[in-house]
Length: 537
Image (cartoon, helix red, strand yellow):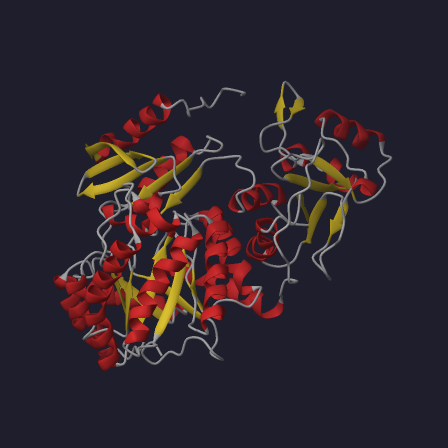
Protein backbone atom coordinates (compact mmCIF):
# COMPACT_ATOMS: atom_id res chain seq x y z
CA UNK A 1 0.00 0.00 0.00
CA UNK A 2 1.13 3.54 -0.83
CA UNK A 3 -1.17 5.52 1.39
CA UNK A 4 -4.63 4.28 0.42
CA UNK A 5 -3.52 3.05 -3.03
CA UNK A 6 -2.66 -0.60 -3.55
CA UNK A 7 0.20 -1.36 -5.96
CA UNK A 8 0.84 -4.79 -7.44
CA UNK A 9 -1.06 -8.07 -7.15
CA UNK A 10 -4.60 -7.69 -8.49
CA UNK A 11 -4.63 -3.90 -8.30
CA UNK A 12 -4.89 -1.90 -11.53
CA UNK A 13 -1.76 -0.36 -13.01
CA UNK A 14 -1.28 2.91 -11.16
CA UNK A 15 -0.40 6.29 -12.70
CA UNK A 16 2.26 8.52 -11.18
CA UNK A 17 3.82 11.92 -11.82
CA UNK A 18 6.10 14.42 -10.08
CA UNK A 19 5.71 18.10 -9.26
CA UNK A 20 8.02 20.73 -10.75
CA UNK A 21 7.46 23.43 -8.13
CA UNK A 22 9.83 24.09 -5.26
CA UNK A 23 8.69 21.69 -2.54
CA UNK A 24 9.36 24.39 0.03
CA UNK A 25 6.60 26.41 -1.65
CA UNK A 26 3.70 24.55 -0.04
CA UNK A 27 0.89 26.37 -1.84
CA UNK A 28 2.38 25.96 -5.32
CA UNK A 29 3.12 22.29 -4.73
CA UNK A 30 -0.37 21.62 -3.38
CA UNK A 31 -1.87 23.34 -6.44
CA UNK A 32 0.19 21.14 -8.76
CA UNK A 33 -0.73 17.94 -6.93
CA UNK A 34 -4.42 18.84 -7.03
CA UNK A 35 -4.22 19.46 -10.76
CA UNK A 36 -2.41 16.13 -11.21
CA UNK A 37 -5.03 14.30 -9.16
CA UNK A 38 -7.86 15.91 -11.13
CA UNK A 39 -6.21 14.66 -14.36
CA UNK A 40 -6.09 11.09 -13.03
CA UNK A 41 -2.72 10.87 -11.30
CA UNK A 42 -2.92 8.36 -8.45
CA UNK A 43 0.46 8.85 -6.71
CA UNK A 44 2.39 12.16 -6.60
CA UNK A 45 6.12 12.55 -5.96
CA UNK A 46 7.95 15.64 -4.73
CA UNK A 47 11.67 16.29 -4.50
CA UNK A 48 13.13 16.48 -1.00
CA UNK A 49 16.73 17.67 -1.18
CA UNK A 50 16.97 18.95 2.39
CA UNK A 51 15.24 19.24 5.72
CA UNK A 52 13.41 22.42 4.70
CA UNK A 53 11.62 20.50 1.95
CA UNK A 54 11.12 17.54 4.29
CA UNK A 55 9.28 19.64 6.85
CA UNK A 56 7.28 21.32 4.06
CA UNK A 57 5.80 17.91 3.23
CA UNK A 58 3.84 18.00 6.48
CA UNK A 59 2.13 21.18 5.33
CA UNK A 60 1.58 19.77 1.84
CA UNK A 61 -0.02 16.63 3.20
CA UNK A 62 -2.23 18.52 5.65
CA UNK A 63 -3.36 21.00 2.99
CA UNK A 64 -4.29 18.20 0.61
CA UNK A 65 -6.36 16.46 3.28
CA UNK A 66 -8.15 19.71 4.13
CA UNK A 67 -9.04 20.14 0.47
CA UNK A 68 -10.42 16.60 0.31
CA UNK A 69 -7.53 14.97 -1.57
CA UNK A 70 -6.16 11.65 -0.34
CA UNK A 71 -3.63 11.15 -3.15
CA UNK A 72 -0.50 9.52 -1.68
CA UNK A 73 2.64 11.65 -1.36
CA UNK A 74 6.10 10.31 -2.19
CA UNK A 75 9.38 11.93 -1.16
CA UNK A 76 12.24 11.74 -3.67
CA UNK A 77 15.63 11.51 -1.91
CA UNK A 78 19.12 11.87 -3.36
CA UNK A 79 22.39 12.13 -1.40
CA UNK A 80 20.95 13.24 1.96
CA UNK A 81 19.63 10.49 4.30
CA UNK A 82 18.80 12.98 7.10
CA UNK A 83 16.06 14.41 4.87
CA UNK A 84 14.63 10.93 4.40
CA UNK A 85 14.52 10.38 8.15
CA UNK A 86 12.57 13.60 8.66
CA UNK A 87 10.17 13.27 5.74
CA UNK A 88 9.26 9.67 6.60
CA UNK A 89 7.04 11.15 9.32
CA UNK A 90 4.85 12.92 6.78
CA UNK A 91 4.66 10.97 3.50
CA UNK A 92 3.30 7.65 2.24
CA UNK A 93 6.44 6.44 0.47
CA UNK A 94 10.12 7.34 0.34
CA UNK A 95 12.05 6.90 -2.88
CA UNK A 96 15.77 6.30 -2.44
CA UNK A 97 18.39 5.95 -5.16
CA UNK A 98 20.79 3.11 -4.27
CA UNK A 99 23.49 4.81 -6.33
CA UNK A 100 23.75 7.81 -4.05
CA UNK A 101 21.81 7.25 -0.82
CA UNK A 102 24.88 5.95 1.04
CA UNK A 103 27.58 5.89 -1.63
CA UNK A 104 29.10 9.17 -2.72
CA UNK A 105 28.35 10.69 -6.10
CA UNK A 106 30.10 8.65 -8.79
CA UNK A 107 33.18 10.27 -10.28
CA UNK A 108 33.84 7.29 -12.57
CA UNK A 109 37.11 6.26 -10.95
CA UNK A 110 38.69 2.88 -11.53
CA UNK A 111 38.68 1.13 -8.16
CA UNK A 112 39.70 -2.32 -7.04
CA UNK A 113 37.56 -4.17 -4.50
CA UNK A 114 38.47 -7.57 -3.17
CA UNK A 115 35.73 -9.59 -1.49
CA UNK A 116 36.65 -8.40 2.00
CA UNK A 117 36.66 -4.74 1.01
CA UNK A 118 33.40 -5.14 -0.87
CA UNK A 119 31.77 -6.79 2.14
CA UNK A 120 32.81 -3.82 4.27
CA UNK A 121 31.14 -1.50 1.76
CA UNK A 122 27.93 -3.51 2.11
CA UNK A 123 28.14 -3.03 5.88
CA UNK A 124 28.22 0.72 5.25
CA UNK A 125 25.11 0.36 3.09
CA UNK A 126 23.29 -1.34 5.94
CA UNK A 127 24.45 1.19 8.52
CA UNK A 128 23.26 4.08 6.36
CA UNK A 129 20.00 2.59 5.10
CA UNK A 130 18.72 0.49 8.02
CA UNK A 131 17.51 3.47 10.11
CA UNK A 132 15.15 4.50 7.31
CA UNK A 133 13.96 0.91 6.87
CA UNK A 134 13.15 0.63 10.57
CA UNK A 135 11.33 3.95 10.57
CA UNK A 136 9.25 3.10 7.50
CA UNK A 137 8.40 -0.28 8.99
CA UNK A 138 7.27 1.35 12.21
CA UNK A 139 5.11 3.87 10.35
CA UNK A 140 3.78 1.35 7.80
CA UNK A 141 4.94 3.29 4.74
CA UNK A 142 6.58 2.03 1.56
CA UNK A 143 10.04 2.44 0.09
CA UNK A 144 10.81 2.65 -3.60
CA UNK A 145 14.26 1.34 -4.39
CA UNK A 146 14.75 3.45 -7.49
CA UNK A 147 17.84 2.44 -9.43
CA UNK A 148 18.88 4.64 -12.34
CA UNK A 149 21.22 3.58 -15.12
CA UNK A 150 22.95 6.94 -15.07
CA UNK A 151 23.60 7.16 -11.33
CA UNK A 152 25.18 3.88 -10.27
CA UNK A 153 27.94 4.17 -7.71
CA UNK A 154 31.62 3.77 -8.58
CA UNK A 155 31.62 0.65 -6.43
CA UNK A 156 28.87 -1.02 -8.49
CA UNK A 157 30.27 0.10 -11.83
CA UNK A 158 33.74 -1.22 -11.05
CA UNK A 159 32.41 -4.67 -10.24
CA UNK A 160 29.37 -5.01 -12.54
CA UNK A 161 29.78 -2.28 -15.13
CA UNK A 162 27.45 0.54 -16.12
CA UNK A 163 24.91 -2.07 -17.11
CA UNK A 164 21.52 -3.63 -16.38
CA UNK A 165 23.37 -6.20 -14.26
CA UNK A 166 24.83 -3.39 -12.15
CA UNK A 167 21.41 -1.80 -11.79
CA UNK A 168 19.90 -5.04 -10.54
CA UNK A 169 22.74 -5.72 -8.12
CA UNK A 170 22.43 -2.24 -6.67
CA UNK A 171 18.72 -2.82 -6.00
CA UNK A 172 19.32 -6.28 -4.53
CA UNK A 173 21.88 -4.92 -2.07
CA UNK A 174 19.31 -2.49 -0.66
CA UNK A 175 16.60 -5.14 -0.68
CA UNK A 176 18.79 -7.45 1.39
CA UNK A 177 18.88 -4.77 4.08
CA UNK A 178 15.08 -4.45 3.96
CA UNK A 179 14.61 -8.19 4.25
CA UNK A 180 17.08 -8.46 7.12
CA UNK A 181 14.75 -6.17 9.07
CA UNK A 182 11.65 -8.05 7.84
CA UNK A 183 10.49 -5.07 5.77
CA UNK A 184 8.70 -5.91 2.52
CA UNK A 185 6.72 -2.81 1.48
CA UNK A 186 9.10 -2.36 -1.43
CA UNK A 187 8.58 -1.14 -4.99
CA UNK A 188 11.37 -1.30 -7.58
CA UNK A 189 12.25 0.91 -10.50
CA UNK A 190 15.04 0.36 -13.05
CA UNK A 191 14.99 3.54 -15.10
CA UNK A 192 17.21 4.60 -17.98
CA UNK A 193 17.01 7.20 -20.73
CA UNK A 194 17.83 4.37 -23.15
CA UNK A 195 14.59 2.40 -23.56
CA UNK A 196 16.42 -0.78 -24.57
CA UNK A 197 18.63 -0.68 -21.44
CA UNK A 198 15.52 -0.01 -19.36
CA UNK A 199 13.71 -3.03 -20.82
CA UNK A 200 16.70 -5.30 -20.24
CA UNK A 201 17.14 -4.09 -16.65
CA UNK A 202 13.54 -4.82 -15.64
CA UNK A 203 13.61 -8.23 -17.27
CA UNK A 204 16.86 -9.07 -15.54
CA UNK A 205 15.44 -7.91 -12.20
CA UNK A 206 12.37 -10.12 -12.64
CA UNK A 207 14.58 -13.09 -13.48
CA UNK A 208 16.66 -12.40 -10.37
CA UNK A 209 13.55 -12.12 -8.21
CA UNK A 210 12.31 -15.43 -9.57
CA UNK A 211 15.61 -17.06 -8.64
CA UNK A 212 15.44 -15.58 -5.13
CA UNK A 213 11.77 -16.33 -4.59
CA UNK A 214 10.90 -12.63 -4.27
CA UNK A 215 7.85 -10.87 -5.69
CA UNK A 216 7.89 -7.07 -5.36
CA UNK A 217 5.95 -4.62 -7.57
CA UNK A 218 7.58 -2.73 -10.43
CA UNK A 219 7.33 0.98 -11.18
CA UNK A 220 8.08 1.49 -14.90
CA UNK A 221 9.53 4.54 -16.61
CA UNK A 222 11.96 5.77 -19.22
CA UNK A 223 13.73 8.64 -17.52
CA UNK A 224 14.55 11.90 -19.31
CA UNK A 225 12.37 10.91 -22.28
CA UNK A 226 12.17 14.48 -23.59
CA UNK A 227 9.09 16.18 -25.03
CA UNK A 228 6.62 16.07 -27.87
CA UNK A 229 6.14 13.00 -30.01
CA UNK A 230 9.70 11.81 -29.36
CA UNK A 231 9.15 11.73 -25.59
CA UNK A 232 5.90 9.82 -25.97
CA UNK A 233 7.40 7.36 -28.44
CA UNK A 234 10.42 6.62 -26.26
CA UNK A 235 8.20 6.14 -23.19
CA UNK A 236 5.76 3.90 -25.07
CA UNK A 237 8.62 1.76 -26.41
CA UNK A 238 10.04 1.12 -22.93
CA UNK A 239 6.93 1.04 -20.76
CA UNK A 240 4.70 -0.49 -23.39
CA UNK A 241 7.12 -3.30 -24.19
CA UNK A 242 7.07 -4.46 -20.56
CA UNK A 243 3.34 -4.00 -19.98
CA UNK A 244 2.60 -5.97 -23.16
CA UNK A 245 4.51 -8.93 -21.74
CA UNK A 246 2.82 -8.68 -18.35
CA UNK A 247 5.42 -6.77 -16.32
CA UNK A 248 4.70 -3.55 -14.44
CA UNK A 249 2.40 -2.37 -11.67
CA UNK A 250 2.69 1.41 -11.78
CA UNK A 251 4.07 3.79 -14.41
CA UNK A 252 5.26 7.32 -15.07
CA UNK A 253 5.84 8.97 -18.44
CA UNK A 254 8.66 11.49 -17.77
CA UNK A 255 8.21 14.44 -20.13
CA UNK A 256 9.94 17.80 -20.32
CA UNK A 257 6.53 19.43 -20.17
CA UNK A 258 4.07 20.44 -17.48
CA UNK A 259 3.57 17.38 -15.24
CA UNK A 260 -0.16 17.07 -15.93
CA UNK A 261 0.70 16.43 -19.58
CA UNK A 262 2.18 13.10 -18.45
CA UNK A 263 -1.13 11.65 -17.31
CA UNK A 264 -2.83 11.23 -20.69
CA UNK A 265 -0.03 9.14 -22.30
CA UNK A 266 0.04 7.00 -19.14
CA UNK A 267 -3.65 6.28 -19.53
CA UNK A 268 -3.24 5.46 -23.21
CA UNK A 269 -0.34 3.07 -22.66
CA UNK A 270 -2.29 1.27 -19.92
CA UNK A 271 -5.45 1.04 -22.02
CA UNK A 272 -3.54 -0.51 -24.89
CA UNK A 273 -1.90 -3.05 -22.60
CA UNK A 274 -5.35 -4.14 -21.41
CA UNK A 275 -6.37 -5.31 -24.86
CA UNK A 276 -3.07 -6.44 -26.42
CA UNK A 277 -0.18 -8.69 -25.57
CA UNK A 278 2.92 -9.73 -27.45
CA UNK A 279 3.99 -13.30 -28.22
CA UNK A 280 6.70 -14.79 -26.04
CA UNK A 281 10.06 -14.29 -27.70
CA UNK A 282 13.78 -14.54 -27.25
CA UNK A 283 16.33 -12.07 -28.53
CA UNK A 284 16.93 -12.49 -32.25
CA UNK A 285 20.00 -11.68 -34.31
CA UNK A 286 19.02 -9.38 -37.12
CA UNK A 287 19.33 -10.51 -40.72
CA UNK A 288 22.19 -8.75 -42.51
CA UNK A 289 20.32 -6.78 -45.14
CA UNK A 290 21.32 -5.24 -48.44
CA UNK A 291 19.73 -2.55 -50.56
CA UNK A 292 16.93 -1.57 -50.71
CA UNK A 293 16.87 -2.06 -46.91
CA UNK A 294 18.93 0.08 -44.58
CA UNK A 295 21.37 -1.82 -42.37
CA UNK A 296 20.10 -0.05 -39.20
CA UNK A 297 16.41 -0.51 -39.87
CA UNK A 298 14.27 0.51 -42.81
CA UNK A 299 11.20 2.66 -43.23
CA UNK A 300 8.81 1.24 -45.80
CA UNK A 301 5.89 3.29 -47.13
CA UNK A 302 2.86 1.46 -48.54
CA UNK A 303 1.50 3.20 -51.62
CA UNK A 304 -1.31 2.90 -54.14
CA UNK A 305 -2.38 4.99 -57.12
CA UNK A 306 -4.48 7.35 -55.00
CA UNK A 307 -1.67 8.11 -52.53
CA UNK A 308 0.91 8.61 -55.29
CA UNK A 309 -1.32 11.08 -57.14
CA UNK A 310 -1.96 13.10 -53.98
CA UNK A 311 -0.33 16.57 -54.25
CA UNK A 312 1.55 15.96 -50.98
CA UNK A 313 3.03 12.62 -52.08
CA UNK A 314 6.66 13.69 -52.28
CA UNK A 315 6.52 15.28 -48.85
CA UNK A 316 4.78 12.22 -47.37
CA UNK A 317 7.69 9.98 -48.42
CA UNK A 318 10.38 12.39 -47.22
CA UNK A 319 11.52 13.87 -50.53
CA UNK A 320 12.23 17.56 -51.01
CA UNK A 321 11.53 19.37 -54.25
CA UNK A 322 14.66 20.98 -55.64
CA UNK A 323 14.28 22.80 -58.97
CA UNK A 324 10.97 21.01 -59.37
CA UNK A 325 12.37 17.49 -58.94
CA UNK A 326 12.11 15.32 -55.80
CA UNK A 327 15.36 14.59 -53.99
CA UNK A 328 15.88 11.83 -51.42
CA UNK A 329 16.95 13.03 -47.98
CA UNK A 330 18.24 11.42 -44.77
CA UNK A 331 14.67 10.81 -43.58
CA UNK A 332 13.18 9.71 -46.89
CA UNK A 333 11.48 6.34 -47.18
CA UNK A 334 13.90 3.51 -47.93
CA UNK A 335 11.48 1.53 -50.10
CA UNK A 336 7.91 1.34 -51.28
CA UNK A 337 5.44 -1.50 -50.77
CA UNK A 338 2.70 -1.63 -53.39
CA UNK A 339 -0.77 -2.12 -51.93
CA UNK A 340 -2.03 -2.69 -55.47
CA UNK A 341 -0.62 -2.90 -58.96
CA UNK A 342 -0.02 0.62 -60.23
CA UNK A 343 -0.51 1.15 -63.98
CA UNK A 344 -1.35 4.85 -64.19
CA UNK A 345 1.53 6.41 -66.23
CA UNK A 346 1.64 9.65 -64.22
CA UNK A 347 1.80 7.69 -60.97
CA UNK A 348 4.58 5.47 -62.29
CA UNK A 349 6.51 8.56 -63.37
CA UNK A 350 6.24 10.10 -59.89
CA UNK A 351 7.50 6.89 -58.29
CA UNK A 352 10.41 6.77 -60.72
CA UNK A 353 11.38 10.38 -59.95
CA UNK A 354 11.63 9.57 -56.22
CA UNK A 355 14.42 7.03 -56.91
CA UNK A 356 12.98 4.93 -54.08
CA UNK A 357 12.91 1.19 -54.89
CA UNK A 358 9.82 -1.01 -54.75
CA UNK A 359 10.07 -4.11 -52.56
CA UNK A 360 9.52 -7.52 -54.10
CA UNK A 361 7.10 -9.22 -51.73
CA UNK A 362 8.62 -12.66 -52.26
CA UNK A 363 11.98 -11.49 -50.88
CA UNK A 364 10.64 -10.46 -47.44
CA UNK A 365 8.51 -11.71 -44.57
CA UNK A 366 5.71 -9.27 -43.76
CA UNK A 367 4.53 -9.74 -40.16
CA UNK A 368 1.26 -8.03 -39.28
CA UNK A 369 1.56 -8.40 -35.48
CA UNK A 370 -0.88 -11.28 -35.32
CA UNK A 371 -0.13 -14.84 -34.29
CA UNK A 372 3.24 -16.37 -33.44
CA UNK A 373 6.44 -14.75 -34.61
CA UNK A 374 7.61 -16.00 -37.99
CA UNK A 375 10.34 -18.59 -38.44
CA UNK A 376 12.16 -17.34 -41.50
CA UNK A 377 15.56 -16.49 -42.90
CA UNK A 378 14.11 -13.56 -44.83
CA UNK A 379 14.25 -9.98 -43.55
CA UNK A 380 11.14 -9.29 -41.47
CA UNK A 381 9.07 -6.19 -42.16
CA UNK A 382 6.79 -5.32 -39.23
CA UNK A 383 3.48 -4.05 -40.59
CA UNK A 384 1.15 -1.93 -38.48
CA UNK A 385 -2.37 -1.08 -39.65
CA UNK A 386 -3.67 2.36 -38.76
CA UNK A 387 -5.77 2.23 -35.61
CA UNK A 388 -6.70 4.90 -33.11
CA UNK A 389 -3.83 6.35 -31.07
CA UNK A 390 -1.13 5.24 -33.47
CA UNK A 391 1.74 7.03 -31.69
CA UNK A 392 1.31 5.08 -28.47
CA UNK A 393 0.18 1.74 -29.90
CA UNK A 394 2.65 1.47 -32.77
CA UNK A 395 5.52 2.60 -30.54
CA UNK A 396 4.70 0.04 -27.87
CA UNK A 397 4.24 -2.93 -30.18
CA UNK A 398 6.82 -2.21 -32.86
CA UNK A 399 9.39 -0.83 -30.44
CA UNK A 400 9.11 -3.91 -28.24
CA UNK A 401 9.78 -6.26 -31.15
CA UNK A 402 12.55 -4.14 -32.63
CA UNK A 403 14.30 -3.96 -29.26
CA UNK A 404 14.57 -7.74 -29.29
CA UNK A 405 15.87 -7.96 -32.85
CA UNK A 406 12.53 -8.81 -34.48
CA UNK A 407 12.29 -6.73 -37.60
CA UNK A 408 14.58 -5.27 -40.23
CA UNK A 409 12.05 -2.63 -41.19
CA UNK A 410 8.71 -0.96 -40.45
CA UNK A 411 5.67 -0.34 -42.59
CA UNK A 412 2.95 1.78 -40.96
CA UNK A 413 -0.12 1.40 -43.18
CA UNK A 414 -2.96 3.91 -43.32
CA UNK A 415 -1.32 5.97 -40.56
CA UNK A 416 -1.12 9.74 -40.59
CA UNK A 417 2.46 11.03 -40.39
CA UNK A 418 3.71 7.46 -40.75
CA UNK A 419 7.15 8.42 -42.05
CA UNK A 420 8.17 10.61 -39.10
CA UNK A 421 6.70 8.19 -36.56
CA UNK A 422 8.59 5.28 -38.13
CA UNK A 423 11.91 7.08 -37.84
CA UNK A 424 11.12 8.08 -34.24
CA UNK A 425 10.37 4.45 -33.34
CA UNK A 426 13.60 3.21 -34.92
CA UNK A 427 15.58 5.82 -33.00
CA UNK A 428 13.83 5.03 -29.71
CA UNK A 429 14.64 1.33 -30.24
CA UNK A 430 18.31 2.33 -30.66
CA UNK A 431 18.49 1.08 -34.21
CA UNK A 432 18.81 4.05 -36.52
CA UNK A 433 19.62 7.63 -35.52
CA UNK A 434 18.46 10.12 -38.13
CA UNK A 435 18.37 13.23 -35.95
CA UNK A 436 19.66 14.55 -32.67
CA UNK A 437 18.52 12.65 -29.59
CA UNK A 438 17.66 14.81 -26.61
CA UNK A 439 17.88 13.36 -23.10
CA UNK A 440 15.94 16.00 -21.22
CA UNK A 441 14.89 15.60 -17.61
CA UNK A 442 11.24 16.31 -16.78
CA UNK A 443 12.05 19.05 -14.24
CA UNK A 444 11.32 19.03 -10.52
CA UNK A 445 11.75 21.27 -7.50
CA UNK A 446 15.55 21.07 -7.86
CA UNK A 447 15.59 22.56 -11.38
CA UNK A 448 17.72 25.69 -11.71
CA UNK A 449 16.39 27.09 -15.00
CA UNK A 450 13.24 27.05 -17.15
CA UNK A 451 13.75 23.58 -18.52
CA UNK A 452 10.95 23.67 -21.06
CA UNK A 453 11.97 26.90 -22.79
CA UNK A 454 15.69 26.07 -22.69
CA UNK A 455 15.05 22.61 -24.12
CA UNK A 456 13.05 24.11 -26.99
CA UNK A 457 15.81 26.65 -27.70
CA UNK A 458 18.48 23.94 -27.78
CA UNK A 459 16.28 21.75 -29.99
CA UNK A 460 15.70 24.59 -32.47
CA UNK A 461 19.46 25.08 -32.91
CA UNK A 462 20.75 21.49 -32.77
CA UNK A 463 17.98 19.12 -33.92
CA UNK A 464 19.69 18.47 -37.27
CA UNK A 465 22.67 16.42 -35.98
CA UNK A 466 22.09 12.70 -36.68
CA UNK A 467 23.61 10.41 -34.07
CA UNK A 468 24.41 13.19 -31.60
CA UNK A 469 22.93 12.81 -28.10
CA UNK A 470 22.51 15.98 -26.02
CA UNK A 471 21.47 15.85 -22.37
CA UNK A 472 19.66 18.82 -20.84
CA UNK A 473 19.61 18.52 -17.05
CA UNK A 474 17.98 20.92 -14.64
CA UNK A 475 20.40 20.36 -11.78
CA UNK A 476 23.60 18.62 -10.78
CA UNK A 477 21.69 15.69 -9.23
CA UNK A 478 20.84 14.55 -12.75
CA UNK A 479 24.26 15.27 -14.20
CA UNK A 480 26.68 13.90 -15.04
CA UNK A 481 25.43 10.47 -13.96
CA UNK A 482 21.90 10.59 -15.33
CA UNK A 483 23.21 11.69 -18.72
CA UNK A 484 25.79 8.92 -18.94
CA UNK A 485 24.45 7.95 -22.35
CA UNK A 486 24.89 11.43 -23.87
CA UNK A 487 27.66 12.91 -26.01
CA UNK A 488 27.21 16.44 -24.67
CA UNK A 489 25.56 17.74 -21.52
CA UNK A 490 23.97 21.06 -20.53
CA UNK A 491 23.53 21.09 -16.74
CA UNK A 492 22.27 23.69 -14.28
CA UNK A 493 24.99 24.16 -11.66
CA UNK A 494 23.49 27.07 -9.72
CA UNK A 495 20.93 29.78 -10.43
CA UNK A 496 21.81 31.48 -13.71
CA UNK A 497 24.84 29.25 -14.30
CA UNK A 498 25.39 26.27 -16.59
CA UNK A 499 28.05 23.53 -16.71
CA UNK A 500 28.88 21.82 -20.00
CA UNK A 501 29.96 18.19 -20.32
CA UNK A 502 31.50 15.96 -22.94
CA UNK A 503 30.33 12.50 -22.00
CA UNK A 504 30.79 12.21 -18.24
CA UNK A 505 33.49 14.91 -18.07
CA UNK A 506 32.74 18.50 -17.14
CA UNK A 507 34.70 20.71 -19.51
CA UNK A 508 33.29 24.16 -18.69
CA UNK A 509 31.63 25.39 -15.52
CA UNK A 510 29.59 28.34 -14.29
CA UNK A 511 28.78 29.74 -17.73
CA UNK A 512 26.15 32.50 -17.57
CA UNK A 513 22.94 31.01 -18.90
CA UNK A 514 22.57 33.68 -21.59
CA UNK A 515 25.84 32.47 -23.17
CA UNK A 516 25.45 28.74 -22.57
CA UNK A 517 23.69 27.70 -25.80
CA UNK A 518 26.31 29.42 -27.95
CA UNK A 519 29.08 27.74 -25.93
CA UNK A 520 27.35 24.36 -26.31
CA UNK A 521 27.30 24.79 -30.09
CA UNK A 522 30.98 25.77 -30.03
CA UNK A 523 31.72 22.62 -28.03
CA UNK A 524 29.88 20.41 -30.53
CA UNK A 525 31.82 22.07 -33.37
CA UNK A 526 35.13 21.60 -31.56
CA UNK A 527 34.48 17.86 -31.38
CA UNK A 528 33.68 17.61 -35.09
CA UNK A 529 29.99 16.76 -34.61
CA UNK A 530 28.45 19.88 -36.13
CA UNK A 531 26.71 19.97 -39.52
CA UNK A 532 25.63 23.20 -41.14
CA UNK A 533 21.93 23.24 -41.96
CA UNK A 534 22.53 23.90 -45.67
CA UNK A 535 25.12 21.12 -45.96
CA UNK A 536 23.63 18.28 -48.07
CA UNK A 537 25.98 15.82 -46.34
